[in-house]
Length: 258
Length: 81
Image: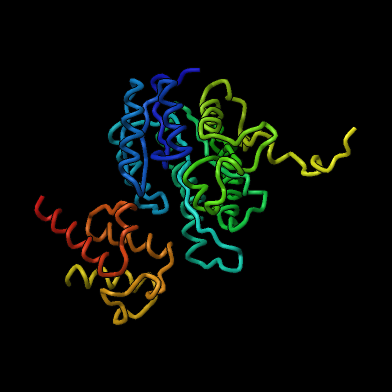
């Protein structure tokens, strides 16, 4: 698979899944715009690692929760490159609270970054993809339909992201733009430590039927596939990358031995 | 307005507390600022003063005074440049 000559914007590309996606797309030949918000040094490191693969990297700071900052970021991309081939909506944030503790501020903060930003970035990206087609992949989570502790707002924001993915896929299809989402289960990243206490570690992470936890590279591989022409007929889907976690029934552990 | 007064206004607006109760010794807990309030205050201060405050630095702030001193030193650096 090759993405040679393509330009990809990966939001939240400094760390975790975003970084793995940026490096995977770069390894297939794409130049990468590395967006970050809170940690410049990790974004600079991602950019260095991308350049070491022989492609270009451009670092742009923007809080995707702020529409004006999204506009500024796309203005920079438009002025500098005049085009975009791939948009990866990866940046995410969240406030880990049970439903009774959710307030308007926490709701808006999470929805603005996880859901609204996907719409606003897709709108601006589609204009830069005019006449050339493109790929948009957004990162969801199994929490969009499974209930996890203190995950309500993020789960709702991811459900919105998945619905938006279907609408974008249909409405942008005439422009030659393929839109999909990828939902992972527990992935071993810093973000996981944000939601679960320190007792959660590599040794007691919920094991998948596949026998290990999902890595950032597992997710990046599927995202990269969706960015290639081989995936042209996949539209509006949320591809689950969870080692079988979401379809596995705990009843298996109660089964009578033969 | 001094840097301290500007930062106090930003924090008071985000946490909905009267700015007169925010002293340099006030902890974020005393100002009733949760982690989201702190992030929003950091973002607002960054935009107001045109600086970046890395999370690693922000995590060291014990109270409002630490936050103000940090912003003051960063603003001074920007003015020198």
